[in-house]
Image (tube, rainbow, N blue to C red; front, top):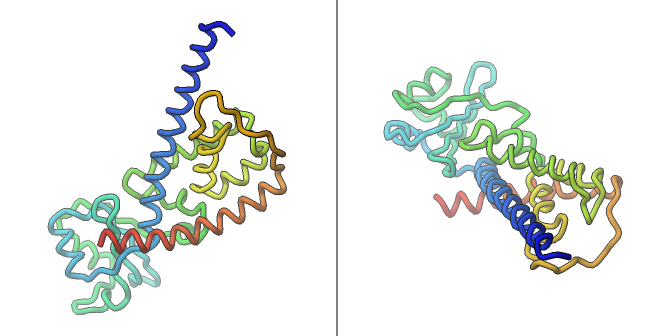
Length: 232
C-alpha cells in the first residue's frame, strides 16, 4: 500500500473518530438534561417566585386536569430542575390555574408548556420525546438521528442493521453503544483489529433493545436523583 493511500486512510479514520466523538458529547449532554428532568428536586412556591423574579427560569411545565393544576416543574438554566408537589401548590395562596402560574412568573420570559402524557411514559427512549421542549434539546435528537443514519449506511461488526435498528430504538443507551463500539471500539489504536465474532441478528437485537430500554429507564431515574441532589 502506497504512502498516499495510507495517508488518505489515516485522514478518513481521524474524520470518523472526530464525528463519533462529537456525537457522543452531544448525546451525553442530552442524557444529562433528560435524567435531571426525570427526577427534579422538590421546591417551594417562594423559591419558584424568587427564581422567576430574578429571571432565572427558562422553562415551566405544568400538568392540568379538569381545569386545576396538579404539578409544576421548572428549570433554572439547562440543568437545575425543581418541582412543586400538591402540598406546595395548595399552600396559601394556592396555585390552582394557569392564570395563577403566569401571575407567579410575572415579567419572566420563561416558556410555559403543558405536560403531555407521551412525555411521561417511563421508557428508555422517552428522552427523545421530551427533549424538544428542553433547552438545547434539538441537538441531542439530531445526534441520535445522525447516528441512526450512519448505522444504515455502514456495515456494523457486532450485529446486522436489523439488530442495531432495535438497539438504537432503546434511545440514548443504544446510540452511545453504537458510537463506542462500531465499526470497532473507539478506544482502539490505529491498526488494531477486533477479534471476529458472530453478529447479532434481528431477533436477538430486538430482545437486547427491550432490555436496554428498561435498563436506561432505571438508570435515568437513579442518575437523575443523584445528580439533582448534588446540584441542589
